Length: 178
Image (tube, rainbow, N blue to C red):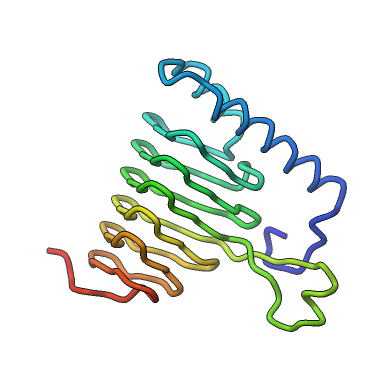
């Protein structure tokens, strides 16, 4: 699965891992806004790796959690969904607006392969100092370069270089950032 190969999501091991992520996110999403210690403990158990000074506003949802790595000083606003069937790497000083969806999960294009129930994934990477506007969807296999800003409501289908403002559906580069 992590190598990008077809896999069976109904595998008992994967089902257990997803159930654990659902349990941890349910507990996280039920915490009080002032319960910083519980939130940090739950994130440490859920995420593959995380730096310091993280804020993830509930509700937060993910497939596994263990395939998500976060740098330091990351802010994720309300309603983020991360389908982490492949690695999702988020750098330091990244800001993610409300309702952002990050999809490392994908399905085969061929109908016969989809019908088989097999799935696959492609990693997603957000470099340091990236800002993702609210309501954005980031598709499988996308990398976004450092300091880049993605406007609200964008659908990011291809890599974006460093130091640009990009927006739209499909997302395209608007101008360089200086």
